[in-house]
Image 1: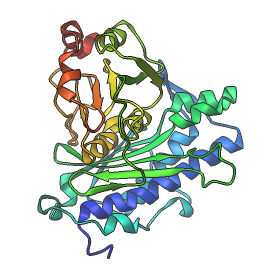
Image 2 (image 1 turned 45 degrees about the vertical axis):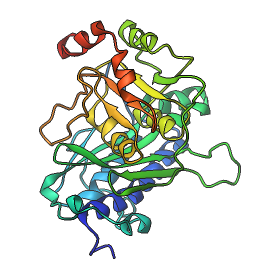
Image 3 (image 1 turned 180 degrees about the horizontal axis):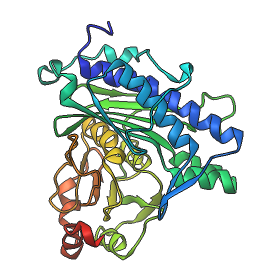
Length: 321
């Protein structure tokens, strides 16, 4: 079935198992007690888990889909030789069996871009290791997003530490979605109806971010790490919207979450024009227009209409943020 399935299904089906292996690598490195932390910039850390997980992901996907451009957070050169057990070749059958719409059946490798964040929530990962605050491990995800042309179409989010507090339960989970095809690994939740719950950044809060949050008149604000984790809250009905009025997010942070969110009827756009981001190979990596995500069933236009004009103007000038 794998060889006869449309390319988009094969790529996402393989990415599910690739993300599972990356999660194992992330857990193994933490268990050994040496994260190999380096600072890439202010509030921007990299660990051996980031580097190794990305090497596994790129080696696995590039060997099977050599014509697809892969762009990773840790640079496209973080590949090289990897241990043989880091290379994943099998695929998730439930994805391969999906019915694919005509517009996605004949896509070629050169029309695709894969965006990889090997460890989304590095700050929380390192803080959990240093402080032994294991609740922060919920924020850690592996993100593999698949773009066709300009559009985020397929996505995989893996949580390496899912179920870590449940003794005897399987550790880790992987969810996936293909816009127009289907989704799996989770049950879509119903967003709160009697209150407005908004999730936002845990570590990049400033006056502009707060101004946008205040304009939404939230009943509750969830301050969490990682774009993947924030969109999971939308998917599972734990939050109504994801509001981040900053240019700090990148394409590898949002490609996979955006595709899955769209697959179940939610939306993710910038905060300046209210448009989805573009994900072609030459696009600017930085999401300079901020991020606005809404859960399935939410009125995205209402949230967009509440964004203060001062916030829009500031986000439209990337050099100032």
